[in-house]
Every structure is written in structure tokens, then in C-alpha cells.
Figure 1 (cartoon, rainbow, N blue to C red):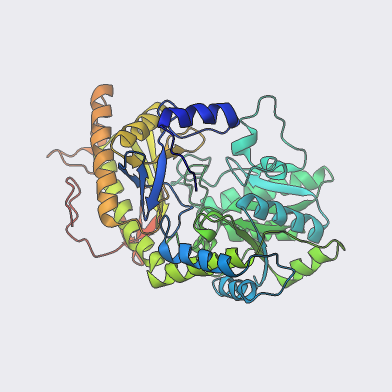
Figure 2: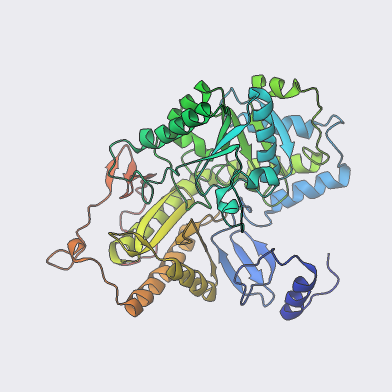
Length: 494
């Protein structure tokens, strides 16, 4: 533990002196110094509380006492590598596998999402004997060299960067801003056919496909929800080409989507990836991650003759912490909370869209929600500067939110899973006020086509089908009936 607490300016000065300049901080003109956190709240050096809407790493809540205790207790007993037998490793592997389809049964424990995705690529190359990887526009899969190559979100930022000849970039399955939108009769097939065309083009040039990799829901790419059926169709094309399907669950796994434990399960029970990677929430802030695959692929990976060993992956402390995280998710029904609170948050944000011309789209599942801001709803012109203004004004209200997507105009909600309905109300209330101020300054108003004679919005209401609400962008979220009193034009506390 630090023996001295610096004032904020000294901390800034020392960071500038000793930390690499490419390591950025939030709110660089006036960064926040956080000294402690608990649950969904973070506290600065003045003990001022911030509502955390973005920390999907602290999955079950910052510094959850059960997780902290599990790690501390095991650290007092033993921490060593996985070449020694220890029950924590096999118990944790067993618990993780129980959340997944039976086919996915073999675990490799590593230390970060980047390590997990890098290992997944190695497995794909070894198992298939092929080299090329298909990734998505705006994808982000990690910071090591192999993953920068397949992360357009990153490599497009580099000066003079060239796309690797082994990497093919498919269209992002974004039905709000992408090539095939919500009015397309079958966007899943249309986007999957783009992958098929890429494969055929690669084959025509003598190239072979090792894998298609995708985040189950794109995060940095702008909270994009793939249309149902897309993964199944892509997997068919990729497997016919001799490749495999890698689902990156680093950002969205462990119950965040509410209705399911894993994001890829939103595509339906008939879809099972060949490899699943996970990280971030797996250890609630402790550095750990995992790759889970089939027995067939695991044995194919072993056929190289090279042993796989990771010094810290799967150590007893990490596994104890991982087990505690799973226990808390179950004990506190955090997946259920994600479904209920996420549905309520989404409805509150949909209500904002009814009143604010800056809100172009609301999309998400559970506690993974995006709000896309636009200057013109018909043209869908990205409101990049306005999104940044919202973020900074929220910071002044001690609410932490971020914006991402290719145009940096999508407000991202990825809070700790203990996020409450009261938290949702507070955040949306502040966003409502900020949007009102911005629209007044910009002289923006709702298009006349959405206003009826009596002055009320006449947009088409979300339709209910199979207990899901289908929003304007073709996405859906589970409708809860616990808040029948929600007023579409006024915030009401419960």
C-alpha cells in the first residue's frame, strides 16, 4: 500500500514524467483521481462520489467483499503455477463449462483478454492449417501485435498503417448505420453474404481462411447488436471454407446481456462457436481470462508438439477469485438484475428519443446499452462533438459515461452489474437536461413529421412480441412489467 498520498497535481506531474505518453487518461484536461470504490460508485481524493456507468471490469461491483476475501484467503495459503495439481483449477474449469454448450469443454487459463484472443488465433492457425482471419469493421480484440492486425478500431488510427495481407475486414452488422439497415428484409443474410464474398475472393487469390472472429456484441464499434441469424450463416460459410468461428466475449459475457449468460447465445440455441474467449469481468478486476474450446480443437492444438504453459494463468488465487465472481453472480442474481434494470434503462432512454432530436438510436441488451447521437435524424449525421459535450457535462454531475463507435458519437452504458433502477433514473435525468440545453443552443427541434396535431410525438411505438420490445433499429430487449407507470414525457421515481 502506498505510504504517501500525493495531491492531484503532483500525481499528474509524476504520471507525465514516468508513464508513457500514449497511455491516456479520461478527461485529460481535468482528469479524475480515484482513490477508492465500492459497488457501482467510485470516490475521488475529496471523497466525492461518482456513479460508474462504464466499468464492465468491476463486473459484480467494485471491491466486492466476497471476491476480495476469496483472493486474500487463498493468497495466505498458496499461489503457484498450474503444473502443480490444485482443486481450484479443476473446480473453476468445471463451473465455467457448466455455463456453456457441452461441445465447449476444454479450458486454457491466461491473464487478459488480449492473451485469450492471441491464443485463440494460435489455435485456429494450428487446427486448420490455414492463415487468413476475417474480422469486422471497427472491431477491437486486444493490444498485442497479432490482435492489432485484426482490430480495425486500432490499426486505422496508426499513421501509415497498412492492413495485413492475411486479414480481411467484413462489414459490421450494424442495422442502424451500416450498409443494410432496419428496413432491409433480411439483414442477417445480407451481412453474412458479405463474409461469403470475402471467402470466395480470398480463395480466388489462393488464400485460405483459418477463422472468423467477432465480439458477440461490438463494443468499441458502437454497441452494435448483430441481427439474429447472422452468426449461424457466417459460421456455415466459414466452416465450409475450412475455418472456425471465434466468439469474443471479453466485453459482454457473464450475464451482462441479461436474458443469457453469454452474448453469443442471443443468436439462438442452434449457434455454438468453436472457440469462446473471455476476460475483463471474469476476475472482477483481478487479471485473468480464459479460452474455452472443443476437445477436437484442443487436441489439434496439441499436435504441434509444443507445450502450452502460462506462468500465472489458472493459479490458485485467480481461480479462487473466479469462483467467487460466479458465486456472487448467482447469489445476488446479477444476471436477473441486468435483465430488469437494463430493460428499465433502455425504456427510459427510448423515452428520451421520443423528445430529443439529438437521439438517433437506442440499442442494447441487458446492461450493455448504446445511445447514438445525431445532428439530423433522417441523414443520421454523427453528433460527435455533442456526444463529447454530454460526457464532460455528466462528469461535472459526477456521472461517468463514455462515447465510442467509429464516429465517437455513441454513449456507452456498461456499468457494474449491481447498477440499480435509481442509478438508471439519475443518469437519464441528467442526460435529458444536458440534451435539452444542447438542442436549445443548436436550435434543434423534433422533425415536424414526428409531431401530431396535439403536440405529442407520433412515432411508432415499440411493438411487443414474445415479451420482447422491438425498437426502431430492429433490435429488441425484454420488456418487464414492473414499471407500468413509466411516463413517456416525464421522469417518475419508483
